[in-house]
Image 1 (cartoon, rainbow, N blue to C red):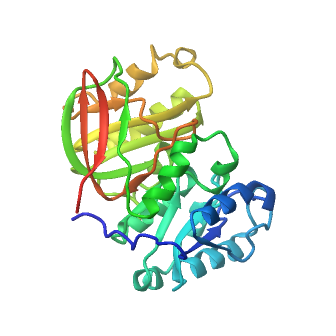
Image 2: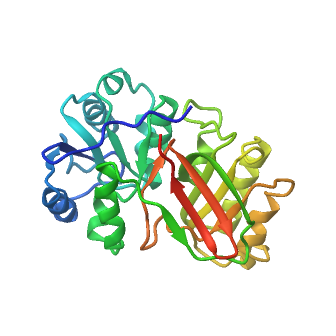
Length: 303
């Protein structure tokens, strides 16, 4: 059963800005606010948006209260999260999704926000794995920022990218589960653990050592989460050092080791993650993945 799509946005609809992880300033969010306003949307700042408490955007209690208020909000049609980093997972325990179910809205973010997107998926709702508010002030492709605006209005973009020698050719269909690799590992045994049988898993990562990627993939493999995918897509997997320094021949060999015995299509190099490309993906929505000698494409299907 595909996840339920929240209502798409129209001019005049409201977007809430919420900080659940690292702190932000008005300067860092100015570009996002200006872009949303140019699209004809209204922007509202959640309480404590610019708070700071060490590495967090305020203590846990007010951050969770602001998140809960945003989920419950009957007026907002989307929540654009300020930035990732670390901290969102500290807010999940005790969240009440009943107000969200009464007033579904698009949750927009990636990286540390993966946990919240997976929580929404467990409630049966789609979300957007996409640039966050801070991304508008960074070197993210303008085409992807425009694609986010279009996705919020109901025009989910396809992803098309070049072939890679490590690809495994084939085609499949299934709901997309786009997430950060190390955070996916932390969902095992929790309510946020996604059902991946028949899914197209899209993984991204940043600033990790190869052995930590190996550990995460080994954990997923031992838990059986890699056995019955429809397909696997690898986006940006930014490493802190070459795989050879940890004893691996290459990143492709590291990943391939954990895919032994599987036969689904695998596509490397998708424009997803922390690099200058981060094309929006609707988590929980069905897509068609095609991996051929000419390249790979991930295309949203009509519901």
